[in-house]
Structures are given as C-alpha cells and as structure tokens.
Amino acid sequence: MKKGINCYLLILGNLILGMTVFVSIQKLPLPSWLNPSVVILVVFILLNLVQTYFFNLKNEIKEFWSIRKILYFPIGVICGTLIAISPMLLAVLFGQLPTSEITFFTDFTIYSICLTMVIISWEELWFRGIFLNYCSKHVSEIIISLTIGLLFALIHILNPKINLIQTGPSLFFAGALLTIVYFYFKTIWLPIGMHFGNNFSNSIISAKFETNSIFGSDGYIGAFILATLFFIFVKLTIVKHPKPL
Image 1: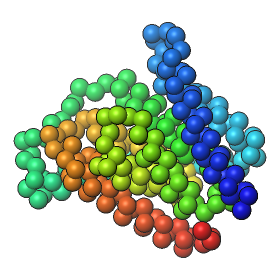
Image 2: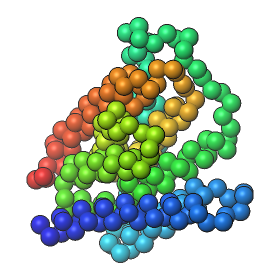
Image 3: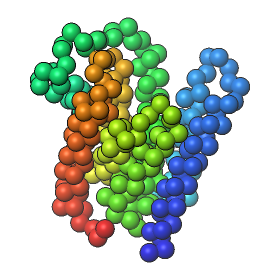
C-alpha cells in the first residue's frame, strides 16, 4: 500500500517537475537559432536516464526504448491520423460538414515536421517516462493509465483558451489511451507515433466545424472513439497481464 501511494506521489512529482522544466527553459535567454523545445527534449531525455539509474530500470529502458521497435512509429502515425480525422469524416458522412469547408495546408516544411516531432517527443517523455515502469511494479497499469489521463486533462486548466467541459473527455481518454498502449506494446515509439499523427494531421487539415462540441477535433465523438479504444486495450491488458487493480 505504501509503495502504491509513493507511486502516485512520484507521478504527481514528475508532472510538477516537468512543468518547472518547461517554464524555466522558456525564460532562458537562448540564442535565436536554438528552439526551446530542443532544450526541453534534451532535459527530459537526461531526466529519464537519471530515473533509469535511480529506479534500476536498465532492462525496461532497453525494451521500451529499443530502436528495433521503431517500426511502431509509422504504425502509430497512421493510427493517430485516423483517430484525429474520424470525427471530421463522420461529420461529412452525416451531412453535418460540407467538403468545401475542409481546408488542406500543404506549405509545411522539414523544419515544421521536425519541430512537431521534437515537441511531441518531450511531451511523451514527460507523461510516459520510464518512471512509469517502476510504478507498474506496484500499481495496476490500468490505474496508472487512468491517473495519467486525469492529470493530462487537468494540466490544460492552465490554458485559458481551452474549455475543459468540451475538451476534457477527449484529453482524458487521449492521455489514458497513449499510456495503456505504451504498456501493452512495451514501447515508447507507438505513443510517439500516435501523438505525432494526431498533431500533424490537425496542423494540415482544418475545417470551420473543428470547434463543434460534437464533431470537432476535441469534441464528444472524438472522446467516444478514444474511450472505445481505451476500454478495448483495458480488456486486452487484463487478459494478457492479469493483475489486481
């Protein structure tokens, strides 16, 4: 019980530490050629390596960060893209969105692609860092996924532009889904790919309908899709790794 509580404190502490890193580096007088996100990524990589040593997770980082599993990345990109555009496709299918209102942006650059990759990578190392592998030894992977989903949704309270009543469910299940697939497939590459596919597809495809509470990019249809996938993996996880909650 004590170790379980310590794991929750570790997850919360890692969230606070990540916020501190993000805010601090944003305020550093960096040279114009160095994007702050690159520095943040380096810091999170180092933080994960320190946690690997501190919690004796050498075997776990070799497996979950294995370059041999990089094929999960393009699979994740495809899955993340499909999840992201599904609400828009359903809006078109049900006659709620004319195809003429869908806009495609094709002026993206290698720099924008790389920057997106850098940003989602440090976000993944923040919320799905190697410390979760230590927590999974004492707390159910399902409970950890729900906890990460809740924290991922709550942290967006800091963004005044976000309406959590509308976007909260999709944020919650997105964080929970990415965490449970991290555990199920034992790789960081799949959630990185899914995260990249979602963010990049949203940056190149736009519609006036995207703020709609039902069919919007963070609307309730998207939340339903994410929730369905999450509970599918919950069932698969229970079958594959039966553990008491």
